[in-house]
Amino acid sequence: MKKIKNKFIVGFLVVAGLNCHTLYAAIKADLVIHNAKVHMVDGQDGIAQAIAVKGNKIIYVGNNAGADKHINYYTKIVNAKKRLVLPGLHDVHAHPLEASDSAFECLLTSTESLTQHMSKLKTCVNNSANEWVLGWGHSLVTLLEASEDPVNYLDSLSTVKPIAIMESTSHSMWVNTAALKALNFDQNTVSPPGGFIVKNSLAQPNGILLDTAGDMVMHEALGNPTTQDKNRQYQSLLKSLKLLKQNGITSVVNARLYWKRGYLDAWKKADNNWQLTARANMALWVYPEDLNDDNQIATLKSMYSNDSNAFLKVNQIKMYNDGIPTNTTAAMISPYLQDYGMNIGSTTGLNYFDQNRMTYYISELETKGFDMLIHAIGDRGVNESLDAISAAKLANGDIGRARRHRLTHVEFVDTADINRFNDLNITADFQVAGKWTLPGAHDPLELALLGAPRLTNHVPVRDIFNTGANVTLSSDWDVSSLSPFVGMMHSLQRDHQSLPNVKAAIESYTINAAYSMNQEDKLGSIEVGKLADFAIVNQDILTIPTNKIGETKVLMTILNGEVIYKNNTKW
Image (tube, rainbow, N blue to C red; front, side, top):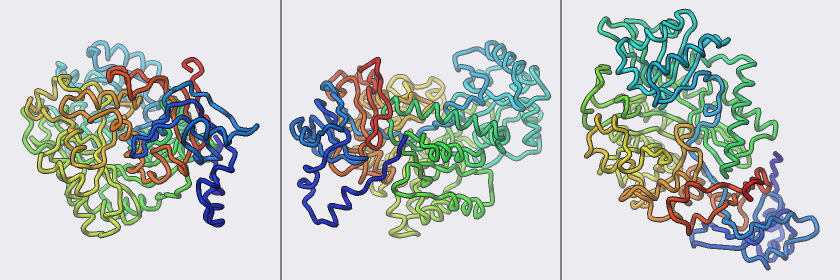
C-alpha cells in the first residue's frame, strides 16, 4: 500500500494565487469514478455523478461531462454502473487486533451448556502447546447457575497449566487455580480498582474474576510477548485490516490498545511495511490497577504521536469509568434489583476510575493533545465522566475546550445529562449493531437486573442527537458486527430512539466520525480538496427499505486515491 502525500496541488494554488476551479480544470486525473450516484455528505445533500482524483486528493466532483475534462490516456476510469458512492467509512470504536487474535484457542458460544463447554475445553487443554490455555465466548450466567464453584470445573482439566476463558462481553474471566496462583490471587487479596475477585462462602476465589481482575489475568498471560507472539499479533492485525477494507472502512480507532502487551508494535510494523490499509488512531489503554498515576501518565505522554499526514497516530486515550449491566458492574444511579449473590460490595456497580482520579488523568493528558475515549454505560458512569471532562476543561481553559473527547456506549443517561454532550462538545458514540440494542430485544438478564422502566430509553441515540451534539455510530467489533451498514440499519429501527433518517446514519459513520478523529477538514465527505477515501456499494441505501440496509456489500474501497479492495464477485 503506497501512502501518497502529495501537496503540490494546494501548494501551487497558494504560491501562484490561482483560482481553485481554474487550476483543477487543467489537471489530468489519475483516477476517475464515472457514472455513479455520489452521496457527498457535504451538508447540502449534494449528489454527483463523478469524482476525479489526482494523487491522493479529490480534484473534481460533479457530472460525467465535467469529469471527462480530467481524463487522459493514463487515467484509470471506474464505471460505477449507477452504484452509490459514499465517503470512506470511519469506525471510531473497534478492536481489530484482538478480534482476530489466534491466541484464543478455545472458542465457546453463550448458547452452549456447561457440559458442552467442558467437552470443548478438554480438547483444547489436551491439544494446547502454549504456556496458557486461553479461550472466549461463554456466558457468565452459565457459571453462576453451576452446581460447583467454577474454578473446580477447570481444575478438573488441569491444576498445573493456567486456564483463562474470557466471557463473551470481555468483562469477566473464568479461571482455574493455576491462573489464580499466577496472579497471587487468594483469600487475602483485595480486589483491584474497577474489578472484583468473586469468592465462595469460605472466602476463597471461586474462579470468576470481574472486569479489572479479569483483565489482569490476560495482561499476565499476554504480557512480555515473545518474537513468536509478536508475529502472531502482526498476522492477526493483517487479517483484520483485510476485513476493514472489505467493509469500506478507511479510518479506524483501535479503541483499547494494550501497550504493555506490545500491540503498538504490530501497528507500527504494518505502517512501516506499507500494509496499513486504513488511517488508524490508537487509543492507549489506561491500566486502573497501576496506582502510580504520575508514572503512567508520563509513559502515555511519551507515546503520543499526531503527525497530520501520518496513517498511524497515537493520539487518544481509552479509560473505563464502569463495567456492564449484565454482571452488575455498570455504574448506576439507582441500585440493581439483584446481585447474583456475587457480593461485589456495591449495589450500584463499580468504577475503574473514580471521578477525581479520572479528572486528574484527563487534565494531564489533554494538555499533551490526547482526546479521551471513555467507556461509560451506566447513568452514574455517564454523569461522572461528563463531570470529569467538565472539570478538566475548566482547569485547562482553551486547551481543554479544543479537545474532541467522547463517551462510548452511553447506554443509560440521566435526563439531566442529555444536553450536556452538546454543551460540553462531547461526542456520544453508540454501538447498535448488536440485535440486543433493538426495542423488545433486551437481554432478559438485563431486564431482571434493572427493570423495564430503566430500559425505556436504553441507548438514547435520538435524545442526544436532538440536542445538536455530535453523534457517531461504531461497531465495538468483535462484540458486534463490523459492518457499518448493520449499525446504520439498526439505528433506524429503534422506535422513538431512532436517528431521523438514513442520511443522519451515514453522517454518523462519516463526517461526524471524522470530526471525532480530528480529520473532518480532510475526510468524512466527498468534496474538492479533500483526501480521496470512498467506497462504492452494491445498493442505494438512500432509497431501499430500511430492513435491507444491513445486507449492503462494498464493491470497491478507495484509500488515499488507490483502489485497495475490489469485490469481483459482486460487481
